Amino acid sequence: MSVLKQLVAELNSGALKVVDLTQPLGPDTPVIGLPEMFGASPGVTMKVISRFDDKGPAWYWNTISMGEHTGTHFDAPVHWITGKDLPDNACDTIPAKRFVGPACVIDVTADVAKDEDFLLTPARIEAWEKEHGKIPAGAWVLLRTGWNTRTDPAKFLNVGENGPHSPGFHADASRLLANDRNVLGVGVETVGTDAGQAGGFDPPFPNHTIMHGAGKFGLASLRNLDQLPATGAVVIAAPLKLVNGSGSPLRVLALAPA
Ligand code: 23J
Ligand code: MN
Image (cartoon, rainbow, N blue to C red; front, side, top):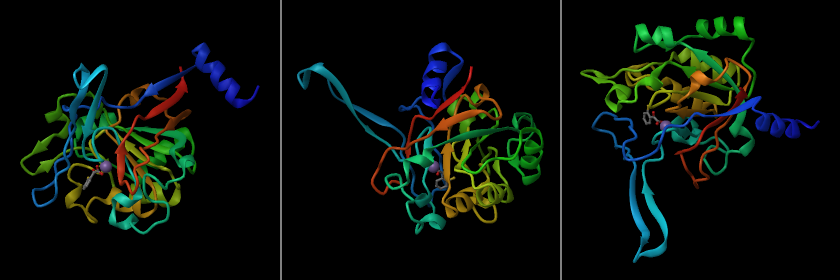
């Protein structure tokens, strides 16, 4: 049987499942807060155009407005200064082939339960590889932290007196994944692909700096990573084809053994 026929058969039989890795997107969706001197990214506004009324007696539709980096969203290389001059670096020019890849899920939930500022290290990646095999080129590396259980926006953003606290990547881990493993990108359950405190790291926001400088992508605010195996799932994460877009909200889907 061809691989696509088998795919359809196994989706129909229930041997494979489709896992939705996306948060609901609406006015209550939490957005990142940056220090005041920087521009703020607005969350979601929806306005009714018509709803079976004078403006449209038989149809319902809305306008939507939001920052590109709202909710479950994609970060393109052009989002960061390090990626601004790379070829095919924006939402409309990235080849669609690069939106699909095998998922490697690294579970650091227990570490994050002890330390909200936990950072993934190269040693931790190598320990994962000892157990599950080498991260293949073109993989989506998804960091499972347990942050998805924080459905209260205040707990999700977790802003303290000295800024936000949430887990992320050590700069050397981002270098290993981007340069040595040649991943498609990384995905996280938190509001952004850098740790909450990463504005004060060297370089600031190291994961954005390194990933996007290497032409790699980011996925933020993922859910349901606990429903994926460490390896063996395929992730499809295609942003809107926004002309010159730096990112966009998207529906992230995984195909996984049921
Ligand atoms: C701009 C500045 C810092 C960060 C971000 C955006 C994001 O997390 C994002 O959504 O790309 S950390
Ligand atoms: Mn973003």
